[in-house]
Image (cartoon, rainbow, N blue to C red; front, side, top):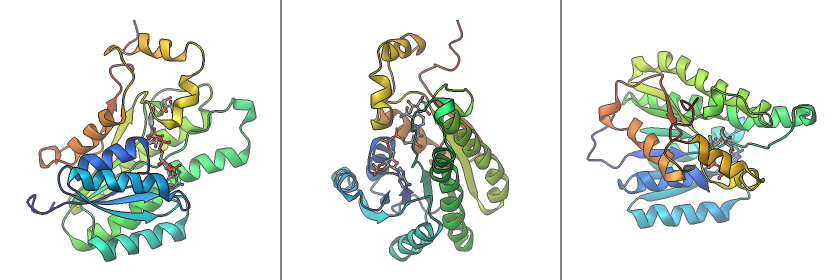
Length: 256
Ligand SMILES: NC(=O)C1=CN([C@@H]2O[C@H](COP(=O)(O)OP(=O)(O)OC[C@H]3O[C@@H](n4cnc5c(N)ncnc54)[C@H](OP(=O)(O)O)[C@@H]3O)[C@@H](O)[C@H]2O)C=CC1
Ligand SMILES: C[C@H](O)[C@@H]1OC(=O)[C@H](O)[C@@H]1O
């Protein structure tokens, strides 16, 4: 990692809203230079993230790219490198969770969910860690997986498989990249209140069910996850590599 007195160079994918926005702002509080990725055509929310990063003390750089698209990821990597040089921190956060019953999942929905959630992490990590390795300064990769990597969901059959894939990808890359001083870890949020699950949490009884399941007594908020991501990028976390960090208020361990 670089001298901690220098502003860190950070990319957060899917930073227009939710957990990605909170993460971008968390790094902004360290005066970091934060590349705020968003899908093409969705600039408005990303601009709000950029304003919040600036207000926090950071320096935002807006960069459009669909993380599932190889050409757009290559262009994003070139643009961010031209602006910042190699990254210190990559946060793979972009994701979709289109709730669907198993027998309604067609191959298009299956493929799109995998392309954004899993192929996206592969493409973005390969493009940006190639630059990190060439620079020889080490770095950190944190990918947003999910508690759904460890458990199932009746309407998340397609989604859960992508999250298990992300956790697995981080473990293999922890081996590949550690010799270059780059750690790779996954953060596994539980139920966090964002737009991705707004409709699902509005279903009768769903919120109450979670309130009973989660020992800390509340669903999570984006800052809960942003804090965990940030912790994994601190110098003190340099020996944490290939780990999966649950951020779920204790929901997973609450069997009885
Ligand atoms: N909320 C939760 O309970 C949990 C969330 N997660 C994971 O956290 C991550 C963030 O989700 P969350 O903040 O909750 O949800 P949001 O829907 O609020 O945010 C998702 C972000 O990803 C962006 N995005 C979607 N597709 C693409 C793409 N192809 N390329 C680039 N960006 C894209 C969205 O852009 P746009 O705004 O333009 O649509 C949006 O900014 C996801 O990976 C999700 O699976 C994991 C566990 C629990
Ligand atoms: C979007 C869901 O509410 C959320 O996504 C996950 O990964 C968790 O398992 C929650 O179900």
